[in-house]
Length: 325
Image (cartoon, rainbow, N blue to C red; front, side, top):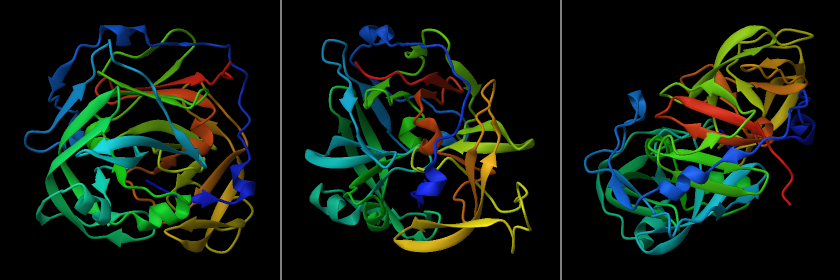
């Protein structure tokens, strides 16, 4: 849930070893039945609340959803309580949120005060609503609770209205396939989407983090589709080259919640995740990392792959993205 647009310098693609072309096995989707689900997600992702459920569309009606790439951030069209809405898919957000204006339009009913939400540069107040029913057409419907909280900063940073942020509380109960090579999203039952060959599968914790090393320093990084940089770590976790973190090293501007801030960054870091070792990875050092892990791995790096995220299976799989034909 970073929502940081980095400078062009930091968005230079990481250099990674060539990988053999591979496809993703999604034929299992043909076996998806039309049925209601109330799965118990692993660990602290079990946030659906009383009566929370996910219903998957039957195979006769299933179709992938085209997403809008907003600087690496994934936006899909959905329907909330009968009203068409713009949905940001964000594995870095622990809770699903609806903007106050759209919550009113969709008839969401607040029933109590919610927690303060950290967006990395600000904390915003929230309320909790029970009558949340979000459909991603031809794929799945999420029912239960959601937070009502301001999304104006996110919308401003992306230059696009965001009505709903679909977070890990619901995404933890599905298998999520982001086909970056074709700008398509698949949402299906846990375990139903697998790499056909040459996929690089990494263990994924219940809180959505993976093991990684940045310049040899072991870290836990949250897989954050809401962050469009490459790597963002908490200050002090990885040494800044060419000077101390407080006063030395190269410094870059980042934008979050409409405000420009100055942070230190590494532009030549080596990243090791499983058997992948991209180099020249951009690393931002920042105290305002909205995560319990050591940092974030964002779409600035992940968009080079087709990605399967399955919290209930405890895995994230990266497959080299192929050019759409």
